[in-house]
Image (cartoon, rainbow over all chains, first blue to last red; front, side):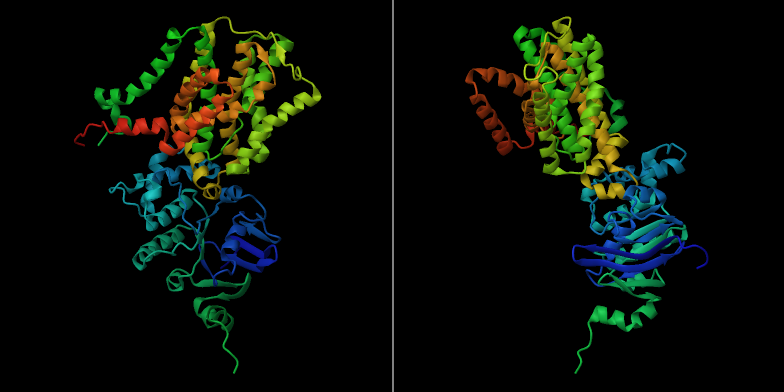
Length: 252
Length: 320
């Protein structure tokens, strides 16, 4: 991994009242990389996403993206720089049809600028993106109300919303959760394809086996602290990680 | 299946089906002044003002997710600006009303701006309190005519101008907003209502869009206020009266939330009814509440949603 990292998090901390949600966490994301972030429930993974994408302001520490300090910027500014995220809880714009959901990111300053002011037929662009993330155009799924779509499609819609921004980094907050094995298997090639197109990703996951098919570098969080970093094999053989997931052995 | 979008233009029957209800509404509204006497024409005018407020309320509540009880704020701000310009600069209503509409909407939006972060009931409470503040400030400082108000402002040249000015405003705002909610901007606003976090993660500033939405609703209200002070040639504290915040909600509930046209219908039913019940004195508020409760319990969808549902059941099955 040569050159400047795309996203760099340095000694980030955040506490909510007395709870230290994130403590001194540092890591880097390189261009074209898929980085996995794992950890038991309540270890601060989603807080980390919220901090990086500007939804929560950190107490201390620095986040830099493409060499620029983005700490404390509002979410929409960060998104316009090309760093966006999915949400763990799927809440699409339920009263709108699926493709209309993408009209929102397609109207962002970032997309308008790259398109040179005009996108032409914005509805057609939206439907093309939905096809890219696996909506069957023939079955008229893009025209269905987002609120009526099953979870698998909602996850794809969420990814579509991110892709519409033409981002450089997508942070996926548990995209695999709640999906069946076959749904996950069909989602993996899509994520792989996005990576090939140059989008870097940070994947927060609980589904480790599926995650390992995509990534070869992991960061492990427990109680807000980074306890390990490295390849899946390194991380899984790390005693601290085993303790965090399985508990410590009782001393006789 | 009923043909959609542009394809509806392919047959006269389809076009008629789409046009009939809209044309009926506009025609009835346009012809109504001819059958009314002078007294009821005035009632018609104030129904128009309430209709504007009700459209604004419906737009903010159902398409942006802001419950805004600022009707009185809009009416008061617009009314005072138009009235004061007329009193001190002697400008004609046709100059003061446009100025008061835009300037008033700007001021109302600025005042509401700090509360835009609030949602649901909190925004409602703050927007409800602001007109009370404005009233007390005017009393305390004894400016703008104080508690007496200012009378003998210029009125409109004749009754037809009065009637068709407000009617034009109602019809134009109705169709303009109807269109807006399906444009990109309307879709973004509905996105903010459904999930504002996702909108922010999509690179769009929700404050900027909410501000624009409030400004649009304030334009309608401030126009109503400016019109009102010239209609009676008078401005005073009653421009900040709670009625302007409350009656539009009743009109929305009765007419059908989220239809935009329903609130207009509601306003044109409720305002005359409220006049007809004038003989009951304060009791009419009770009757009012009873009607509201009746609608909420037995027809919570409102008149318009019900009618639309029934109308679409008449559809003709066609081969596609």
